[in-house]
Length: 328
Image (cartoon, rainbow, N blue to C red; front, side):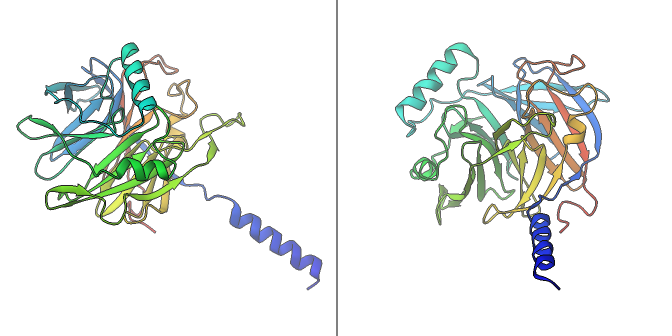
């Protein structure tokens, strides 16, 4: 074989190796609008036993029980009283921007995710204060003390530096012993906490991963514009961690111990279908819940109408991929 031909084959092989693998598309089974969320802005979704729960980032005193219906689902409020937020170690500038944002919009606590354990405790993530509110089965709410080094370690890794780009996703394992948090963007990352003698700690450091980078949006294939990679939410199923990645319009399985990406599935085709497109290039999926049979995505429309005029929060139900979520 000539040197020129060998060089050409090497170049072609390297180019093929660098080309990203296109994830398989998930099949959309159903779409449900949500009625009864006064503030709209569905930002978190979970299922506790047989009960569907959701939160809005515009309402500080309630979570919602969702009642399935043939078409629209009905949201019923469960109210609670959150105690004063614990003192934050975020820099003064970020805290002041949060305060100023609250003057022009609802949702001072900015609840972005919800998860629950087998004991029926509900965990609500406040992005604005990088804080975790536990609402027990009796409805009593209390802020959980988080490790002192959590924010410091995250900021040292390049996360939690920008207003409205703090913590966006939360999931806890069924036993209530491990808890993962997702930093949204610029930089995005994953953090993990372990419960030790009743307190949440960073047993071997809080940070699993941190990464920067920008990507084109599959929702605007005609545009060369790039946007920051981001995490929207997290899910946990059968000992495996999953991330919602709304810019790329995909769900990814990740190593729960390292955060390393293992496999991804796309929902871009559903988002691009006639009538479903929103004016934002990075998508509106903000909430994720998985079971063996499929995936549920919650869409936060930010009070915007999509192409068909629908303005209500939405749930998308996708069929599980061939081979299941654990397939190699």
